[in-house]
Image 1 (tube, helix red, strand yellow):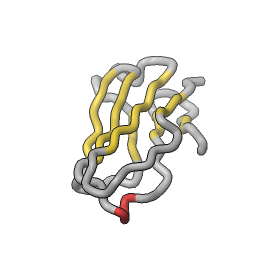
Image 2 (cartoon, rainbow, N blue to C red):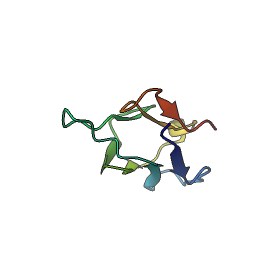
Image 3 (cartoon, rainbow, N blue to C red):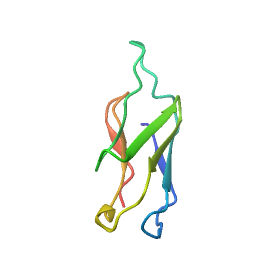
Amino acid sequence: EIVMTQTPLSLSITPGEQASNSCRSSQSLLYSDGYTYLYWFLQKARFSGRGSGTDFTLKISRVEAEDVGVYYCLQDAQDPPTVLQP
């Protein structure tokens, strides 16, 4: 089973600043079809996700108060899909 690790687990940001959250998997999420099966949830237009293999980052530009929430990443490259539970 692939283990997901997310850092930081808690983040306080002032509105207008940029936030960054990293996700690491214990195995590569690059599948044989060439796609990387890593998902970030709570997506918005100001959010961008990038990375490959085992290391991924979610960035939020111009953080707004409404961005408050629980963010998590999920891998679906291997069954069972796994996610870091808060």
